[in-house]
Amino acid sequence: MAQVRLFASMREAAGRAHDEVPGATVAAVLDAAVERYGADFAARLPQCRVWVNGEPVDGDSPVGDADELAVLPPVSGG
Image 1 (spheres, one colour):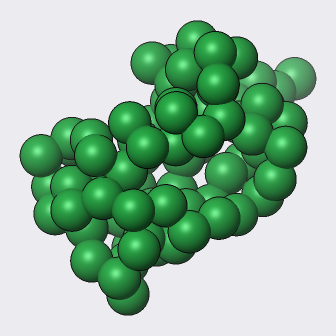
Image 2: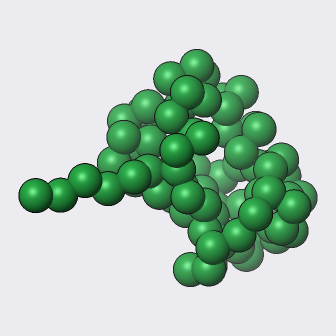
């Protein structure tokens, strides 16, 4: 299972900062996360960037047990 790290509003939507989520690809992991965390998480996900092991990826990218998938919502500053 991939190690999933959630930041800012995604952490709030999921109710946790990290979790282990099954899936062989980024898209499969995110689908499983949506099932686990619900509608609020799903609604915020399209605005997020996803990185695996510190590199930006797309949904078809493979994910292994040793990989860390980070879900990063947009950042605002001032």
